[in-house]
Length: 174
Image (tube, rainbow, N blue to C red):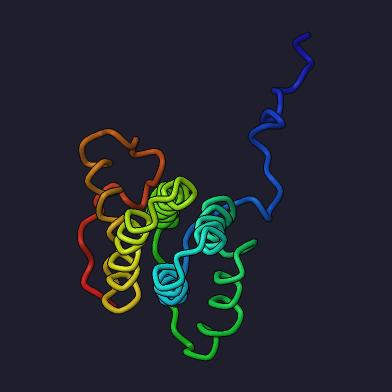
């Protein structure tokens, strides 16, 4: 038995590249994706139809799973918008993924409210997403990233989750 090599990572820990969130990520891709989210979220509020809540929540789910890889908005940002802008600013990925998870949670709640017939509550809930996405897209202020940093400084999120974030503070907008 002494000739055996150490076991490889469990199969559950190995993920296809399409299901891996990038680290680092281009800040400008995140910001352009947020701008697209603003548009869809405003349309969702105005139309107030469950299908749009599904589309909004599904977009966040896809971005949580794989960043821009499976997300139509992510692909549009990475392949079309950002290359035309020619801007690059790399930032840690884990806070951005955390922010997408918050968006998923909020839009998931809005979807449930919509399906239960609480349209106004669903619209108000998506309004929170609009505010956060406007801050991200227009000013480079990622509320999810700020919360991530706060939780990491308090030890709720281990430092090992994002080594580059250990001294995460509010960045000046890009």
